[in-house]
Amino acid sequence: MSDAKGIRILVVEDERPMRRFLSTTLAAREFVVVEAENLREARIAATAHPPEIILLDLGLPDGDGLDFTRELREWSRIPLIVLSARGREEDKVAALDAGADDYLTKPFGVNELMARIRVALRHGAAQEGGNVSEVLEIGPLRLDRVRREVLISGTLVTLTPIEYRLLLLLAHNAGRVLTHRQILKEVWGPNYVHQIHTLRVFMALLRRKVEPDPSRPRLLLTEMGVGYRMRDLWE
Image (cartoon, rainbow, N blue to C red; front, side, top):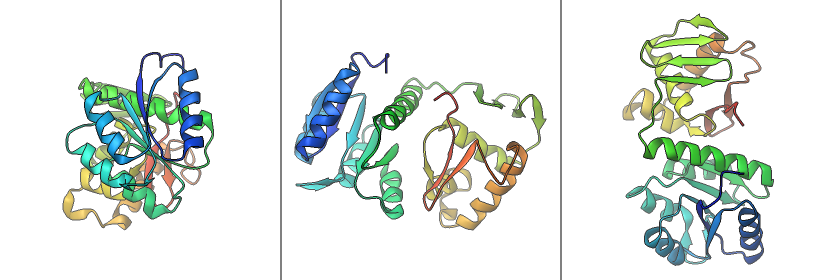
């Protein structure tokens, strides 16, 4: 990651070998690494000198990383990626709903970690700067917010208002997993957060309009048991 020089990253991990591995890997890519081995140290580090991004283990000796995530989201939008041995779908959903930007299950590859960090940093920078582009271009997709036009490989696609809002939400968060609950709340409202079947129906309809082969989607991807994400084709 050639553009990582000087970026401050907080690594919250109680297992020394894993913490050392992460610190060495990130320092070699010119991150400024701050280490914390428990929630107490993490709270101090996050508030005294806020990092640009946080890597967080969930199982810590003095509490659960989910509590830290919820606390952080009360005052900050610092990008946060969970790194955990908990691989169950419900654990991923809980972390993402609590405010995590992404979730990686241990063990994971360095290249995958770096890709997730790039996406989280890009999304965090856009939020901090209020940078909501009028035109979003992701692979074959071109979404014009002003004209409310959607083109796939130059061809105009007609969407219903809900399909448009759904596509826009996924495009703004390209590369990030959004849970069923997050999507339903943003697109339909808080009274619909349990209507997963409705979301699946509209995702199927949307794929028929934007995917060359809806049965093998390349742009709108399913995260089984968790939610959906739009592929970030710049990775």
